[in-house]
Image (tube, rainbow, N blue to C red; front, side, top):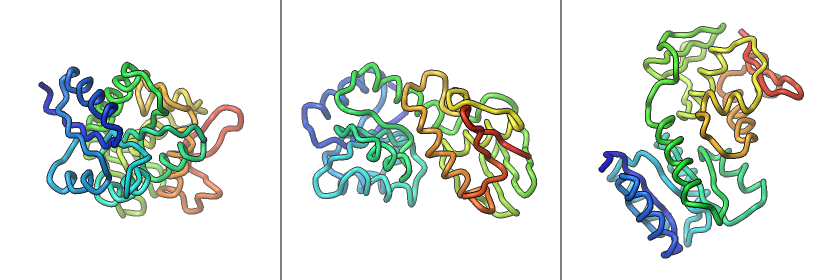
Amino acid sequence: MSDQQILVVEDEENLAEALKFNLERQGYQVIVKSNGYDALNVLQQEAPHLIVLDVMLPGLDGFEVCRRVRTTSNVPILMLTARGEEVDRVLGLEIGADDYLTKPFSLRELQARVRALLRRGGGAPPDGNGEAMTAGNLNVSQDARRAFRDGSEIPLRPREFELLVFLMRNRGLALSRRQLLDGAWGSDFVGDERTVDVHVRALREAVENDPHNPVRIVTVRGIGYRFEG
């Protein structure tokens, strides 16, 4: 049995039971809650390594749960949604979710997403050495997993930190979204490549003097992004 704990927040009883059974077979410890309030109460007592969070919950929907979690925790969040609209997927990512799955989905795909998020979100440093990196007023310590701008620490979520490190390690190179996903999410990530755009927007808010006119993380039209510095 793994010491990695997963909180599943799902009000469809059959699906919740299937998720619990499947994840426990993979060796994870699983806590299941059927509404957002109970999930938030669990987070006051436990420190799960991952949250699998349904969007359509009674009382407090998954978007609001995600917002509240992000005020106190950087735990990776995988959102489940029955909606197919792009706006819902983007909203989930913008408020702090790390990945999403649209119902119906295969349990094999769920397992792949869970493994990728636990591997990258569990505090392990990215591939390469743990050297400190500097670009102008921006300083990053890979070992400490901390980033500073003008001497003040920048609050970055795990995925944002991984993306920033990968960009800085490849400064001056035009990187495609797929390359950024492979470098910061892992090569087995199977989600939407537009996930990168959402996280780049968040990074620009953190590191750019003017996020609307970025000079550090610049767009390379038709390709992706490049870090200048």
